[in-house]
Image (cartoon, rainbow, N blue to C red):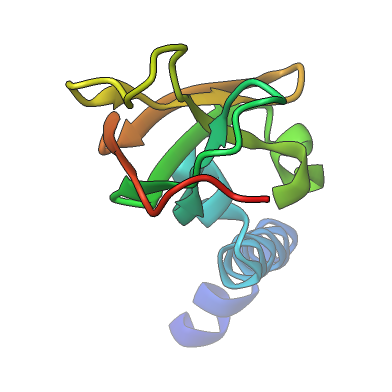
Length: 134
């Protein structure tokens, strides 16, 4: 008799508890916590760095390293819509006859609502690669 009372007492609350527990389990399983855990950040490894130079500069350059890892932050909805083509990763070549002697900072232009949190490495070395082109 006691077992029957234990099961049937407050039956409505027990059903509500099972339903809520099922909903929480389904939300964890669907990946919602992973979005919360990331906190509105996304990492983009090995993004190609381009050289920003004058239009009449026909010299060929080589960057070392030629790719960087970027970490972006912002509203998760904005980050979900982000396309790789929306980012512009570049370094300035300089105006002199030779490339700059020291490593140059990498710049990232991102769409509105997105913040660049980290660029790794933050600088690249610019070297001449060959001579003039036609």
